[in-house]
Length: 403
Image (tube, rainbow, N blue to C red; front, side, top):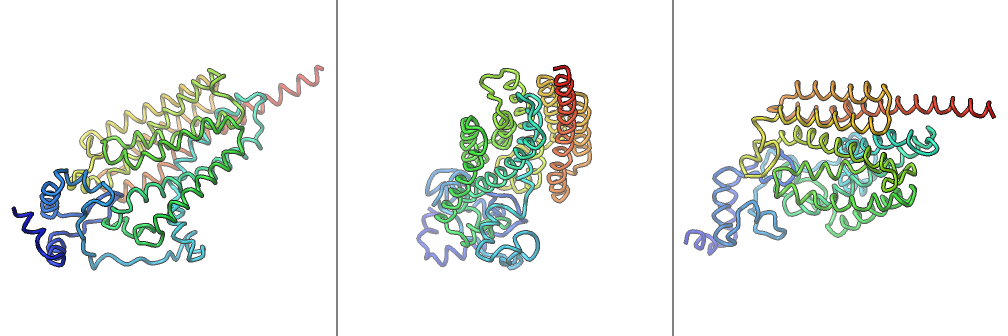
């Protein structure tokens, strides 16, 4: 009855009621609604009356009933970037640079590192052994692909959330949310990114097509997974870790016909999944309070009291699987000391020092933990490859001298 009376009021009155009920909380992650407990109660009653759905599930339907949230005077309007890479782009290109997250490259690094790991691990297994220039060229192609595909993933994410982002303080100024890019143009831009990614993929042996294209499925469903499960980080891991298999076919190793390489790639892939869940669990702690208020599911909220123990278990899993991948691939001491030992140390330091109750500290470790752990794993793999390549070259010279 009450809800029927409210809906019979003029639109201006309903809008006034909403503005009085709603407030804007601190900036948070994507797909968060910033509502006070009282406004959430009002919103719940409206949804249950009109659609008999929960407020969370209904708000995720495109075109669904969303409250009009008044703009808080403390929220600054959009200002074009004055520093960094985006500041040097033509004004018309800036929104597309923002859609690609060019100003936030950490996601690109996390996508690139598994590609680099697999390239360095696969190089000594190639027949003949891949020379350094080939490994370097392959790595640069993967870096380009990581930038492009991460941009496509961000665009798909923003398209899914285009009806939610304007209502969230942290995401309200994203280019689609603020109207700087229309959904049609964003979709066309996403298509252009995917075609660019395909062009990069075509630079590799044709087998890479069969291994690379299935990853698009996970790129597409991740924005949905984070809405319906406490463990969207697992789906993110399936997506971001895909490159852990791609280095092998990129260097001419067909995984389906090379059981040793397939086993090593599978172990490396699962190791990177554990790493993804680990670092994104730290990231999720930045918004744990908002998640609890509005009922959004997250791994951080599900395991808040045991987070450090979960992180420790993930780190042990990651390093153990990484070491197993090296054993199968025939890696040497440089890998086990540099990559496995280095990862164990950097992860242990991060887990011990990160303050999960401090948003800035979580963000610092999310960014720098990527460079620290990813860097030491890459360094160990690179050193091991160069040592093996040097020994291989000596054997080739000795063989030629005998002949």
